[in-house]
Image (tube, rainbow, N blue to C red; front, side):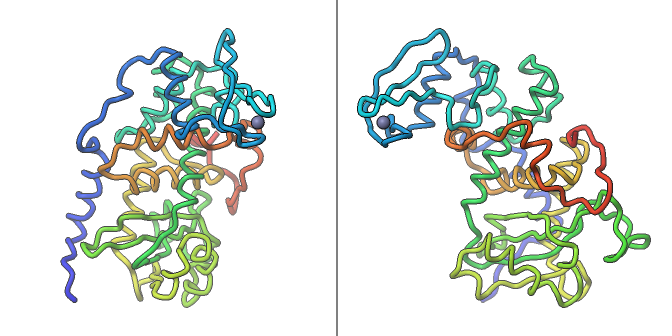
Amino acid sequence: MHLEIPNIYEYTVEALARLTRPADPPRNEFDFDFTEEECAFALFRAKWPDGFRCPQCQHRNCYTIKTRKLPLYQCANCDAQTSLISDTVMRATRTPLSSWFRAIQLHASPAGVNALQLSKIISVTYKTAWLLAHKIRHAMSRAEAKQLLTGLVKLTTVIYCRQNWGEYTLKKWHPREQSLLIGGSQSQSGWFDRIKIKICDKHTLYPKKEMQNSSGFIMENVTADARGTITVASIQLRNRDIKLEKISDFAQRRLADLFGGIGPKHLQVYLDQFCYAWNRVGKAVIGDLLRHCAQTKTITYRELVKGRACVATSSPVTTPEAA
Ligand SMILES: [Zn+2]
């Protein structure tokens, strides 16, 4: 069967257009100032879309205890008390819900936002904005991990930040460079409906090792019924997948434009954020993102700065968002 595949230039332009235009039809349900009460109501709906459920005993009925800030909910069966923000990325926050909602809205928008911009918009310190953004990004990451590639799946290896193939090789890497695997579910039109980009071991890029060394990525990110027909391309000249490489180029430009370059420690979650947006092109993202923030347990500052695995092969690179 012959498939119409758009040429690469058009493909990249289409990718740009899809990612940067507003979802169609436009939805601006959060494009106004929420009161804390309105935010609390919306958060309740996002956290418990089917109504309250006790985290201890799963009971459906509760008493609402009004407090000075957010309401508490006491289970009618076991008396366990739970707050609206427990078990969400907002747990223990001192930032108003309305600021969180604005931050979520901005992260769902096609234009995106960086920590410096966010700090000015919601009037918080850079550190607070950076932390909020990472917590939202954490929810995106967790949501993406649950969605596997399926159907016709293609993979390729690429190199993050590789600009000079003359000076650097597969055995000599610039500190900023990372080896990546990018996989996509390809539709009949040739468009990759769903993609995943993961940092991988640099040995994955060695010639004739792609399939063998991609097995971890495949087991983790591809449904069992799609694993048998996967093709693995390589950044080497033998069997390149130019379309997936173009998506990778596009992701790298997007990260560079918005965040000014990402250090190795946090690169994976920024790649996950790109995939989260790519996998929802043309859709209203805000509802999804609010739900994911409301149903994902938080990550603490300590875990962010110390716990996250560093895959760097040399000293970390300091960039505006990498601190
Ligand atoms: Zn209970």
